[in-house]
Image 1 (cartoon, protein in one colour):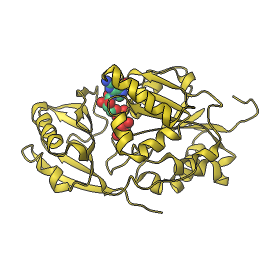
Image 2: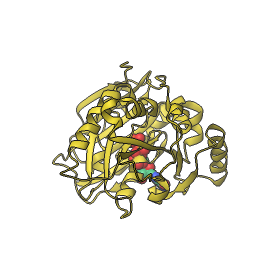
Image 3: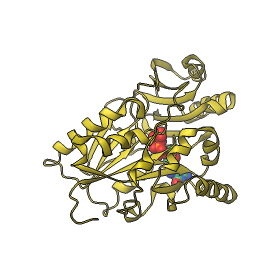
Image 4: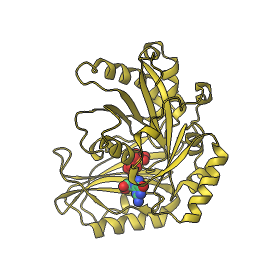
Length: 328
Ligand SMILES: Nc1nc2c(ncn2[C@@H]2O[C@H](COP(=O)(O)OP(=O)(O)OP(=O)(O)O)[C@@H](O)[C@H]2O)c(=O)[nH]1
């Protein structure tokens, strides 16, 4: 750390949908070394789940910035960080980590940090960390331009899920990442287990002018649906419905994320494209709500099409769609 600079460092954690960003933050919060972190989460969809899934934070500040990604976040970054700064006397922290939505272009989130006069005296960008899914990364880099942008802007690349990816696929992905961004150091991390000192290495950030630019081409046709289930569900029925959905619309399903009431117990579920991760039982319910909630982020699918696959699970109390609209 450059001794004279008293501004608070801000690290941006980016990475495509389901790549393992929340898992990384959860693991970081369990380490003693990183000091007190303030976490800002920006999620795509109306029912935020990451805050619930991130687990206990032992007093660290967690601010949830909902709404729509990079398109609308510029002003939000300013107000969120100013709000956070005002809380500092009450809840001290040494670093801010912003988890962006998986669909977000990091450029416009960084822009106010280096341009907004209200922020530049208080905060400094410490670096951009891109989490890349070893299982799906190569495919995503081929299909989603925003994913390439996330990697291109990174100062650090973290390869998740290499424990479940074929070694050859990991090698090919590493080659591709090195083509896109040969400067960023890369490491692998199982379930977010990474040395905080590596992640938060001061001085890692490249000149901020390289962070310019903004793509909106990720937005068209991508929407998030939130489905609610009134009654407890069984894993068999849920997995069958998701299996049928991904078989029918494999390419269009980008992310499935939920908190299920599985026979009365809270269980987190994650699907990334066609891959459904094993269910993760949670120790407690994060809030008073006991209904299952499921977020499906899909490319050019209607709500009715998604909903029909869950029609034989006691369903649907409420459903909503949020599109990533170009707000600029
Ligand atoms: N096997 C394995 N699973 C992982 C690893 N990292 C994350 N996962 C799993 O991947 C799924 C998605 O992880 P998240 O941390 O929620 O991903 P995310 O990037 O925060 O997702 P969004 O916020 O929706 O973009 C979860 O089931 C995690 O347990 C890893 O290194 N290995």
